[in-house]
Image (tube, rainbow over the protein chains, first blue to last red):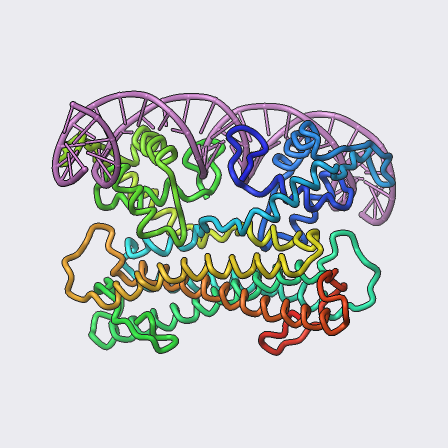
Length: 222
Length: 222
DNA sequence: TCTTACTATATCAATATTGATATACCTGTA
DNA sequence: TACAGGTATATCAATATTGATATAGTAAGA
């Protein structure tokens, strides 16, 4: 990895902007693309987009021109330069950028034994499943729209292409697997709750140590 | 969400440190926990761990004492205070922290039509599958170790508990779904490559527009 | 007229995060 | 002796990221 700037870390935002700007656009346009088309793998705020566009232009990877807008203030439209395209290709050829994943909700679950009551974990997992299902629904709606609409006029940043569609599929399969995991976990919680009820106390269920371990689906957690 | 500090964003590192420090430990200990036990949902470097521990102590959520080490320089051992425990519980009760996910490799794939040759995409996906499979193997090895070892002496930050095991399961299901997605995508690439070969040219395969769309497994991408 | 909403750019403070670096103790080994 | 490797703390510069804020034009509707 050749770094664009000293101290540069292999984060991808700069390269994503280069990739999106193969078709000219403004910072405002780009923000919609993050929110509407690629939120399943990256997000960015204005506060990061505008300064990054500036820096990429300073370094000659983008160039911009100001155009009048039909609906508001002037637009500063950015386009990829030859140098920018080279940097984009270099990044695409640098091998898969597999990095650490971060899940705040898993961190919460990891420590949730501190609450000492599995009913709270159950409520947490139910809420989580709801949130993930909403997300999955949004992705599947896009998938349906993409696979249904044939012959549509090509849109800017269209998700119709093979590569774009493949990233959408990963989002769907990955979030889908998390929903299944919620079900597996909820089932395991209910089994534990039932056992605790049978044993007598009914309300307080401090969690007994390790897992029993099983490969049968739905019983990996018991 | 009540923010710990002005301008505080809902990132989880501070709370993760509080959770891990229910059992006393040093910054160095914590780093191993990130690397060895919870890398499937969070990671952190020394450069972030030490300053964060300092700030948490300043705010009264942690306290520390210096102890001689058996194997090196003195150890600064941190422990959770009552206030720290309260903040941890508040975070656990604040609902699932579902945030945007970021995948550098999906960003690369999204723009890879720029390379104009599906063989390059194929090589990329093969490399990615390899990396993900390695990762999956590491998680499954931990799962096996956890489900096999019964009656072991309880370790610091043991992964034996139900909640901890559930987070491991999500890692396995989630990475597993991504490996399956690699297979689905590689199969789709091969079908396209075969079609292009049959059509004549053999080498250059610019990608024709949209996807055909199908629900049959392995054919969602064609 | 006033307000709301959308378009559009830009900057700020604060925190988050990485990767490099400096220091220093201890143990085993070449 | 010298060096490698593991234990341990700490700081730095640079970049990444969030969320709030300021400014302004346009258009629709109360």
